[in-house]
Length: 64
Image (cartoon, rainbow, N blue to C red; front, side):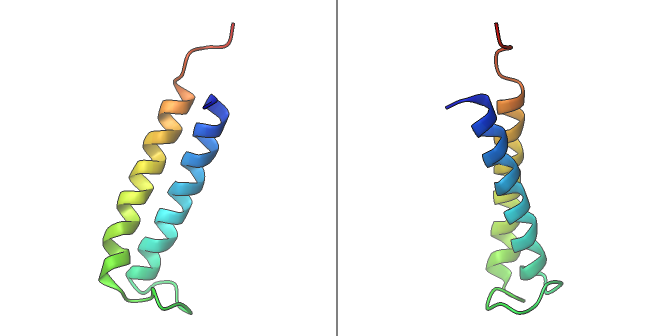
């Protein structure tokens, strides 16, 4: 995979993780995910995975 793809995928996963966390905690309504402890736990894990992918993609080998 290219570095750009890692960074884009990481940013998307991080944003989804934050959204899921906020829904799980009840700050964002209008979904069956609102107020669910499952999403309050899974959201930060997905956000951390996304952050990891973005950092790995951003720290890849410099272009020649």
